[in-house]
Length: 273
Image (cartoon, rainbow, N blue to C red):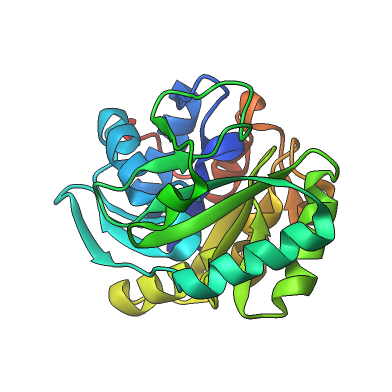
């Protein structure tokens, strides 16, 4: 029997991964079952390629990954960027000023370009500087290298209100999305998870209708609406749930596996991510 879906596209954080950044044995087995039926697994994440580099290989994933909200096609096995997009720094700096004028003071972070990219943050971006972040005391230091994305945080507005305001101020000149708590992101115009998947589809030869996609946050809306079947996790943001064809159990409850076991009721296969 030919499987209905040729591609399984999964977000990482809050979707495929549990809170401890592991993939359960059940989910691995369900992905292997889909693979045995002829379906390809594609990771589609907001994490930049540099972050995927250290996360995916230890999990055993060595295929194509769509990273940086669609800005990168990254060949994990070859450790090679196939495509990438960067922001117009002059434009995004102008828009950050205008957003700040409307929203009040902002804490900023940027992801610099390429596989050697860094996550640079200004004071106040988080309660503490996390592993992999580098603190920049002078905001001018954020803009010395090509930038893939800018992250903004406000003490006055919640994430949904800040994302809405940033979208109105930017008026389509850049993409604005919300990928997690304190993660309102500014990206090159036209860059979404859907654009990244569409590019992968052209490269690999599949269609949107062939794709089942899983996500949990508003940044996953373009991907879920692009795919033939869009699945929101039980822990998903309310806005994403409104765009989904199906609501799965949460990431902690193996929601991806629950859906794949139904869609790919094939014989058991050796588990592999």
